[in-house]
Length: 333
Ligand code: PBG
Image 1 (tube, rainbow, N blue to C red):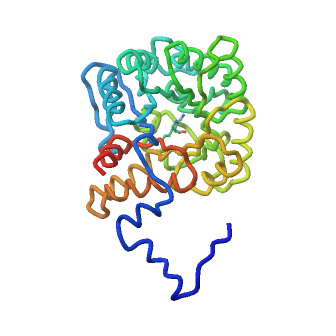
Image 2 (spheres, helix red, strand yellow):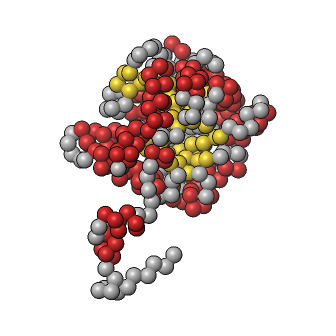
């Protein structure tokens, strides 16, 4: 593109900003409830909503309360929720078997939400960290995160979630070859139309801290995730990861975290044109919400500005803990 700007005073860029009408007509991207995916944290019990201290305003919900949240999402025009379980430490193990238990918290929640709110898409998380005594996304042996053994476990997890009625599978583990393995297992099992939204460009980030508290993985995690998540300095590698996942059968791809990685979002959208999402992660939420609660920034305006930035960067949608609040604001106009 070669933008032409007439020299001053023929050119005055403020002319299209002078009224709300002109600003609306010349706005380049819009944000709506339909662009949002709402991540929900699950816990055992009934009638429970337990605050997550490092994410003020976010709660872990028992399945019945998660169903109510899902109904609220549908009412607000949010197309999907994404489920993350807080797993009781007694159910964590070295082999992570709870991950593919058809009766685990996530699978019970998938069935309950699909039964009560059939129009809503239910996205899952495929990774072993909530079930892993070591807190890692993969199986650990002698301090190493084992790729191929983990992929086998992830395939089992994916098939069980598919059986439970998930509408979007979200592999977030960053093991090599998992998209291809999950895709062929789904085809073989007859789940031909089930979408995969791959966490394709997932960076080894400190912004995930509050999430690990929320799912109870903080205490368990030894070391870091640098052997399987991308170095924050690497853009070409992120593009190779996205290319690989699309080639293996991902339908949609994600960049994560969001705000510090908008350059990656733009590069991914321009390079591949695939449905592209960003995850505005727990630490990003905590920064905005924490500053807003301290009275340092206008929380509502910062929230909406941060979200429209993802659209401007080329994303088709955003996973955000602000989803219901943003949708309410956007509907109010
Ligand atoms: C792990 C997973 C993480 C998030 C989603 N899935 C954390 C991690 O990789 O350690 C982070 C989400 C957030 O921070 O909001 N499978």
